[in-house]
Length: 367
Image (cartoon, rainbow, N blue to C red; front, side):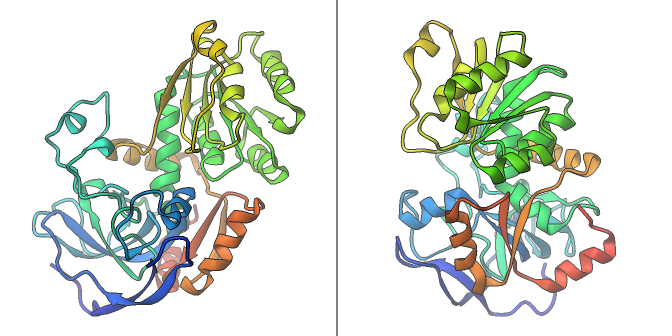
């Protein structure tokens, strides 16, 4: 079932050649809607670090591909089997598309369907994403937005928020225990600080940029440490507030060469370090693994259930996303330049539809 006035063609920003800028041109609006899918009119699309990997050809993306895997918008058509969404619903899109639901990765809760080998791929990474006026998404992965949560907040949460929230949950840090975040002032890190505080955790935020340290403080970290003071200084500062034991767990969202070594060193013996950033290699001193028994695991996107829990936490605690707003596809290159400058505070977003932004303000969407 579809709403009226869905056009035949739309503007989109696509990767048509690796290591080249996005091409902004007309492409067809998705016309075939599988039974479990939604067609949304994109309101806001967000830029993520992985988008640069896609542009470089590192993710094995079939070309052409519409960029951005973080999107939010309004439902304009629903597939025949969709029961939980209606035309007019405001939604955060899921990154995953059509997991099989039957393989070991999908069925075992210890793992996550993102590892499903039979899925339809990842929106904006291996199939078309949200730098477009319309997008086709999987309803089983989508999340309805509470009235108070804006598209500008929701779009970055679709990957960055879900990813760091999953890390906080996997850390198993209990209320009043210490969690550290290395790279706490970035797009993921500043959300992790807020999620952890909302869950009652004590947070050490570590960053190496003036902008990142400022955002870490604004996000509510209990202790903020400048990594430019050096590895030993960071460890010393963490031990000061943890009775010389180290934090219960650490999330590493920094690509810096020595970030993982620092993450391990500030974590207590037998503690857990969760690697979320995606550098070419992760370097861990053997002493941390062997003599201190640091447990290391990787993590990526959350489950749909975790994404819905995250959205409720955002609404209940007024969690905000630091955004750098750009208007329309014509400003994408300006956004990319800012992202590569090292001066960005938080996340970069592109407003795709000003009319949806106006309408949601009438609803009172202030977060």
